[in-house]
Amino acid sequence: MTFSQTKADAGLVKALSGMVDSGRISHAILLHEDDGGGGVGVALAFLQYLYCRNRHDGDSCAACPPCNKIGKLIHPDIYFIFPVVLAGSSNSEGSPSEPYLVKWRELLLQNPGFTEAELYDALGFEGKATTIGASEANDLIRKLSRTSLEGGYTSVIIYLPERMNPTAANRLLKVLEEPPAMVQFVLVTHAPEKLLPTISSRCQLFRLQGDGATQALRYDDSGLFAELMDELLARDFASALETGERLAALPSRDNAILFCKFASEKMRRLFLLQQKLSALVPDADEAEKDWASKCRKTFPRKALEALDRSAQLIRRNVNLKILFTDLVNKLFLSI
Image (tube, rainbow, N blue to C red; front, side, top):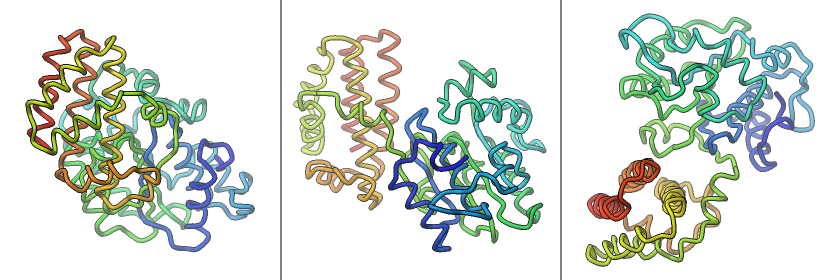
């Protein structure tokens, strides 16, 4: 897959290709996409550019042997990891995702911009809990201990690393702390704030500009989010509860869900600002910068969990007044 076949904007392509051209390649790249944003396709395009023997005009040639193999998803030195339904012991031998690689490749070849739901539907996991477990990490470590089959880079694409259980995350962290030579990691995430901070800090983060975040931020919340943040930071619980009542009185449940999505995207921006990644939030306003400087470093993560949970409960017809009162209370305790 070439960069021209992906959804990556010109700035991202220039940054990724520039790393390869300069020879200053971060051993771990974290691509933050909206669901269905084509992050795995961009990861493949980056690796194809890295492996390509005849790069030109900022893109891979799509014709040399490495490009041919990557385009067909059969390069022997590129491994894929993605969440699956775990069965048996978490310390069992072998990769739990390996039995599903054929279906993974079929979906990726047909639709590089697949959504998480489309992946689980293709793998037969719809409605089931999926995880990246310890046995996956163990298998990866064994693979990385071997030399590459074609004498160049060995690469790993991890889709949704935020789905790693704690054991898998800590084992991956050890590899990222002391990466083997000629090993390239590309992680594709929907929620970088849910990763271990020690993992995200060892990756170079790039944001794929998609429609999801843009649409969420276009929602007109009539200033309710800003009011709520100011009240929470002022420790004015009574006023925050009043704002919660106004949220419960939104015209419809769809509006309530849209507010949760809007607030979630705001929390992701606060997370990036707190992580000193302001270049990824170039349009941040003074209020966002002020909130990021005043709230706890753990607040965006906890707030996102509460907002995600609230959106799920709204869809289940939970009483909105009770729901938003509970949400305000959780935000107040965690800020």
